Length: 169
Image (cartoon, rainbow, N blue to C red; front, side):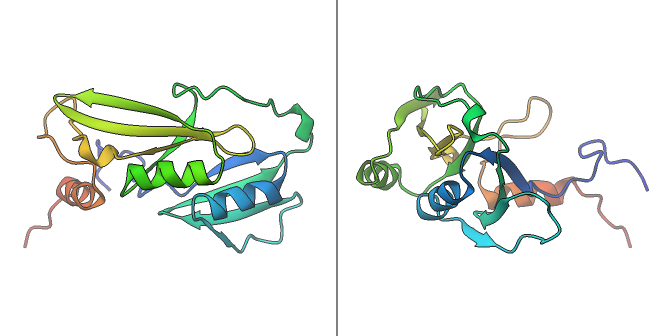
């Protein structure tokens, strides 16, 4: 098989992220009721507590901490901290819903070439940061070669198809 230099491991997509939790139940509630994830079946052969959820094209695996008190409590929302980001349809709706749910968030705006991207940052119950943005407005511009492309799923799929070798008949 010829090596694909743009994708040497032949990756297809992100499958899941794993998060260590103080309380799996509290985290299930957050990811299900705030972010709209759905609990899914988890293999029964694991010898530790946890849960799997799926939504928005990605899985979240929650792992019960063996020492929940060792997870540091975060109060300050720092947009430069590790985080998971989701695109949304309406920043106003997201901000209104977070406020209704009593979830503290920090707003940020990124400007690039006259394009504005709004961001909202907040924590899950264990202090892991979540970002909600309208990042689809910002074009994805490769550092070398290709023309600018939008970050939308359709354009990314088109880009991936163009990178695959073409069969010649």
